[in-house]
Structures are given as C-alpha cells and as structure tokens.
Amino acid sequence: MALFSKRSEEEKRAASARGDLEAAQKKLASLLARESIAATSADRWAQWTAERDAALAEVALCTARLGHLEAAAEAAKREAEIAEITKRVEACRATNTAIAVRLRGDGARLLAELTTLARDTTAATLEAQRLNAILPPGVDPIEVGDFAARELPRLPREDIATTEPVLWVNAAGNLIGSQDDVVADEGGDTGHIAVNNFMQIECFKRRFRSTTYHPAFTADHPNHFFALLRLPFVDRPGVAFDGSLMTAEATTAMSLELPPLPKSSRPVMVELTPVEPWAPAGVATAADRNLV
Image 1: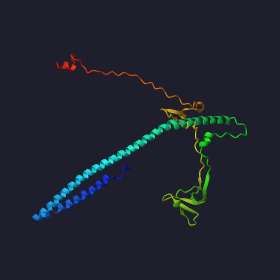
Image 2: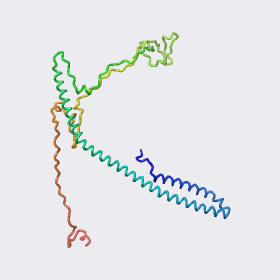
Image 3: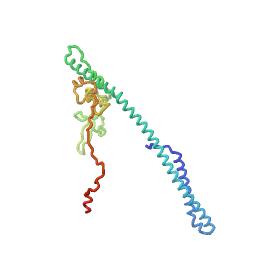
C-alpha cells in the first residue's frame, strides 16, 4: 500500500507537460511521414523543412520542460514524504515516551495486583483442598474459586432432531454401505446387491432411529492460575514472577515487595596510546636500516 497517493501540483504540471510532449512527437512523426511528398518540389520541400525544424524544436522544448518538471515533482514528492515521516516519527517518539511512563506507573501497579491475586488465589485453593479432605458428613465440598472462575460449563447431550429412516441391511441386520446400489425385488421389501458377476448379497429393509444431537461437553481442567502466570519486571530486564517454576506453597509464602534494583559494578580498564610520533631525531628505525 502506497504511503502517499495524493498528486502534488508539480506532478500535475509534469503530467500536462508529458501530454504536450506526446502531442509534439505525434506531430513530428506525421511530418516525417510526408517527406517523400515534400521532395516533389522545391516549394513543398522548403515549407516541409521549415515545419519539420519547428516540430523538432517543439519536441526538444517539451522534452526539456518535462525533464525539469519531473525533477521538481520528484523533489516535491520526496520533501512531502520526509515531512510526513518526520511527523510520524515525532508522534511515535511521544507515544513510546508515554509507554515508558505507563510501564513504570500502571505496569508496576498491575504487577503488584497480579502477584497479590496469584498469592491469594493459591492460598484459598490450598485451604479449600485441606478442608475438603476433612469435611464432616453432610457438608457440601467447598468450590475452588480459582477453577470456578475459569472453568467452562459442563454441557449435557442435547438432541436436535429424530427421524426413522428405512434402510437396507444384510441377513445379519448390518447396514449395506452403498444403499443406492441395492436393487429392490418385486415386493420392494427385499432386494439384492451385486458383489461381482457371480455373487450377490440378499438385502432386507430395516427401520432405524436417526438422532442428530450435540454431544456432552466437558472442558479440560483450567489448571492453577499461578502456574500459568508469567510477569516481567517493568523497571528492569528479567522476570518478576514465573508460576511455572513455583509450587503452590512457595507462591503463598512469596514476598510481594520487588527486590531493589541491582547495583551495577563497572569494570576499570586502562588504555595506553603513544602521545608523540615515533621515532625521535637521531634514532634509526627499521625502515632506515633496510635502506642501508
């Protein structure tokens, strides 16, 4: 998709000049085609030559004008592209600056809320599991909120429509695969289907109940919320929370305070470079000795 589609005034003038050049070239071609007729007399030749020279000059002028206008149109187009790209660059720069601020503000808040939710959800799940294991008789089990919130509903089978078609079967009562190939006998209740040129299967009609239905649906277990959660730091590289590497007990006991930013220890290095050119006056270099 083109980034810039609107034609500038320079492009419109160049298009008009292109049309003028094409008209001048057609006029010249028409004149050149009449050269043999013009050569029949001196007067015709003189008139034709003058018209040809004028047409050649017009073509040259239109060509030069078009070249200048196309160059101007290209320069204007490039200038407009640069202006538009610069505008988008500044807008994108402002957006990314705002994103950095949001990550350190909203991002830090969301990180704290999600890690708190993971801890509280896991603690509630463990407590429900402990109590469900020792429930007194007649007390309903505790529904685990972690799973109840994210579990898809179980759906029973649902019948849509029922019909009773009459179909061809073999002597054992099993369906004939190709119902259309069965040839009915005179009474219509029996028939036969050819297996090959020497063998055929006797067929009988049998009533069936055909039910169209939605099958029962049970979704996969949603798994623990904390185990699927992975959160990056918003103020440094790395991962602040990775539930796939933690146990439920470790999640409930984790601290919600972010660790302090690591102190960077920068190495100290020494760079040694000559200050003055080599060699001092009076000292022979290797290149000088090779000349001896």
